[in-house]
Length: 235
Image 1 (cartoon, rainbow, N blue to C red):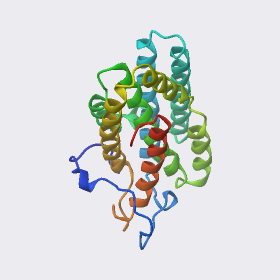
Image 2 (image 1 turned 60 degrees about the vertical axis):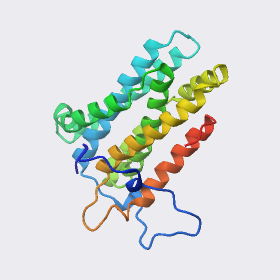
Image 3 (image 1 turned 90 degrees about the vertical axis):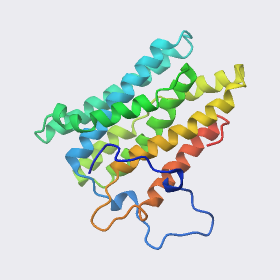
Image 4 (image 1 turned 180 degrees about the vertical axis):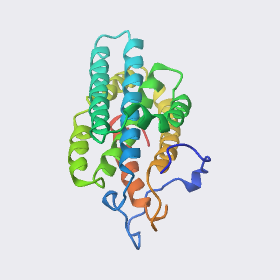
C-alpha cells in the first residue's frame, strides 16, 4: 500500500455521492479493508504530527486571543495522538522514525498544495483535510488486528478539540460575508486534493477494486458535507 501521488485524477474520476435508489452490487465497508499494520501506523502517526504542526502555525498566526488558545489546545491533542501512535509502533518493536519516513514526502507535497494564502484559508485547510483524513484512518482502524484495533480506535476517537476552527471561520464569515464564496471554492479544491491522498491509503488489492470501495469514499464525502454545512458553505 502506497502513500503518495501517482497521478492527478480528473474530476470525473473522483468519488461521487450516489443518487437515491442507486446501490452497489457488492458494498465494501471499512471493515472489509485490510491495510498493512506497520504501514498504517506510520501513516497515521505522521499525519497526526503534520496536523500538530499545521495547528501550531495557525495558532501562532492568530492575533485574536479568543481563538488562539483553543487552536493551541487542538494542536496539543494531535501531538498526544501522534505520541500514542508512535508508542504503538514501538510496541511492535519497530522504529517510529523509519515507519513515518515513507509518507513524509507525499504529505509534504500535499501540505504545499493545500496551504492557502489567507489565514481563513489556512484554517479551512486544517478543518477540511484533517477532518477527512481523521474519518478515513478511524474507519480503517476497524480492520486492523483486534488488539491493535481497539487501542488505535481509542486513540483516534479522542475529541480532537477542533470545533474552535469552525467557530473561528463562522466568526470570520459573519464579520466579512464576502469571504464565504471564496472559502466555498477553496473547500472544493481541498476535498479533491484530500481524496486523491486518501485513495493512496485505501488498499485496492485481493479483488477489492476502486469501484467497490466507492461507498467508503461516499461516507467520507458525506461527513465532509456536514462539516461544510455547519459553516453555511456549499460542499
